[in-house]
Amino acid sequence: MKRLFILIILGLILANIPCFASSKYYLNVYHELDNKVKVDQALVSNVGFKLLNANKIDKRMAFVYSRKSTVNAFSNSLDRRIIICKGIVDYMDSEDELAGIMAHEISHSIDSYNGILRGSLNFIPQAFVPRKYERKADLRAVDFMVNAGYNPLALIIIMNKVSGQYRYEVLSTHPLTSRRLAYIYEYIYRKYPAFLANNAYIDNIYYQNFLLNSEHNRKKLEQAVNSGSKKRIRYDY
Amino acid sequence: MITRIILISLLLTSAAFAVDDKFAEALDKNLKFPSAKQNKFCDTPLKNGNYVLPQAKNIHYEDSLVKKTLAGKTFEIPEPNLTYDYSDSKYVVVKIRPTAGISTNKNGAASGDIVKFKVEEDVIYEGKLILPKGTEINAIVENVSPNGKMGVPAHLVISRFSSPLVENKTLDFTINRQGQNRSLWVYPVSYVLMPFFGAGFPITFIRGGNVNIKPNEVIQIYYRPTRFRKSL
Image 1 (spheres, rainbow over the protein chains, first blue to last red):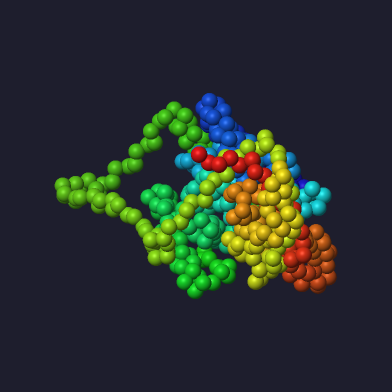
Image 2: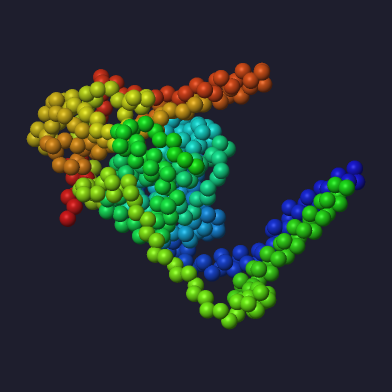
């Protein structure tokens, strides 16, 4: 009993330590950001509504810029708000990249409208087979970007910059980033080859890195293109 | 024994946070990090030699796939839909029917395919015949997401309807359909049956519904002559 009591106390102490550690540092960061926030919120809203209007998306959704330093963006399927965290905006070098991330989240938000009871139960397949929806959102994002006048190759760039690379995707909510990049590249290649033929990002350091790390996958696509196959390609890790 | 291990790990964790705090303070005050200790080895034999640092190469990777398959061909970048005017709500309904069935099954529609429809009734706008009955209308399959296990439905998006008889972008509609969502019952049933010697396992292989647009299905799209202005 005594040991259990000590364990509980120790657990509580351990759980509370992170609350105090470095809090001063994070507060200072927030303070410095205060002037920048308005600009970013305006940009986020502007890009979001431009994507909605250009793609004739008649579903309502709102765009929020969060000051959290998490490198993430997500769509809330309850109130259809798309949240873009400061952490991910920090990585961006162009409006095209922001549009890529937002277009991906818009696709998730549209999915939340589908199905019975105004899409109330649509979270079930999305929660249990999320990778299928992620892949779909990536590809729809390319369409949304093109219709709004953005360069879809920016989606490859921001993803190559931000997304990590897991070993296996079995327990992951997202497909492996290398595969996501390959699917996006294939989609652009087949549907909007003009962006690759006149590649505005060919000298971009992140795009160059993508060309380096996707060589095997692009070879697979080349084989499929040469054989005229339209079957889904199983891209490498 | 357990208590000791926990106490030691607690001490170690606290030390880690203490270091983190110092790091944060250093960042705050723009302090420089402590310099690395002098390397004695570098001081003696390497000190008087002339060494040239390796030059950074200007590496440039080329997209061999694009070079082999797209070079020399001309492609047009699709015109973005930025000249919209949603204040104008004038429209006429256009009833169309697919010339062949459209499906998301294995040998069905693929993203980027052109699908054909035919106008079911004459379309008249402000007393003028715009689209006579039987006019062919093309559309593009924007996205196909196949059905999956666990009852996950397929998705199909068709848009960019066009006809040579009307101006570009005046035929306005997006077909956005989802197949039957069987996951609503596949999940509960498989979970309930799982404790009975894994009887729920085979149920997880049940796939969701495909999207099927039959050739006799009439779809309503809109002719909106003023919604998209011509780009300047």
